[in-house]
Length: 172
Image 1 (cartoon, rainbow, N blue to C red):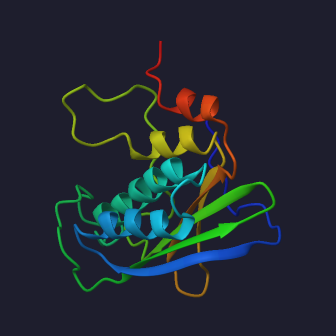
Image 2: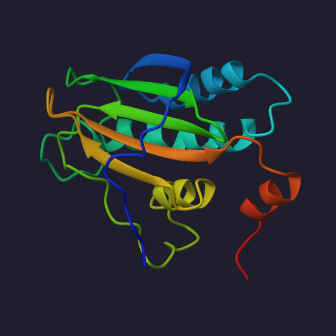
């Protein structure tokens, strides 16, 4: 059973970095670069944090400002409907990655498909990847003050090499 958490658990967090991005095709690249720089080379969680940031920001670029249209994510640039904020914080044994966007098309991310899209599909794996990287510790909520949406995930702060390898193995 899949659970999408609303508000993340509240604990004292140390800010690691924050980045405001225009909704554009370049945003996922800039998010990857920022997270990589914030954590630095050799950080045990760098690879999974960079991938999770890329997936969450890509979803924001594609779906945040569709304004109730078909939600197909065809818009490629900043359409004047707000920006994306990427925030990375550190908890006692995890990293919290959060992406805030205008959230115009829906209040929560779509449910993760129960079956993977065809091998030729170009979309449809992002939240499933985030779910795997976070070991099911992710969610979404609306900001009451702005109506924006935050999608967040918790990533292991110090995953072992075996845990990282397991994340990137193909399912049997």
